[in-house]
Image (cartoon, rainbow, N blue to C red; front, side, top):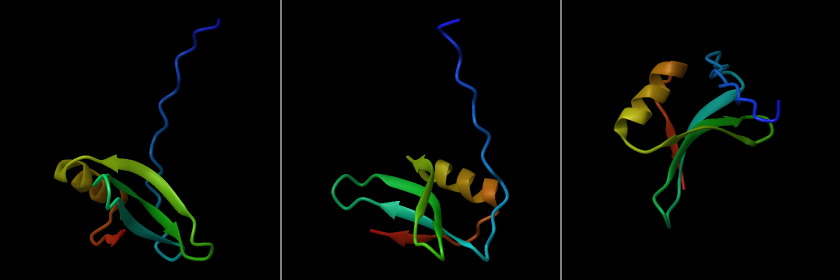
Amino acid sequence: MFFNKKKKIQPDTRFQSDRYTPVLRCSICTGEQTAGFRDQTTGEFHEVMLIRDDRDLEEFKFTYGVTEIKKEY
């Protein structure tokens, strides 16, 4: 069929602390915040979710077992 439903992708809850650093990217202009992980070897940012409020941030921390998150502007 032409109209297939998109499959919902489950988050990868395996967080490798020796390879990735949890990062909260914040836009100075718009105030938009994005949570994700920065690869320590390449410096590449892997976006995981958009943070709209404190509840979203707590969900990200709980899902990936993160206690401390670094902010980048």
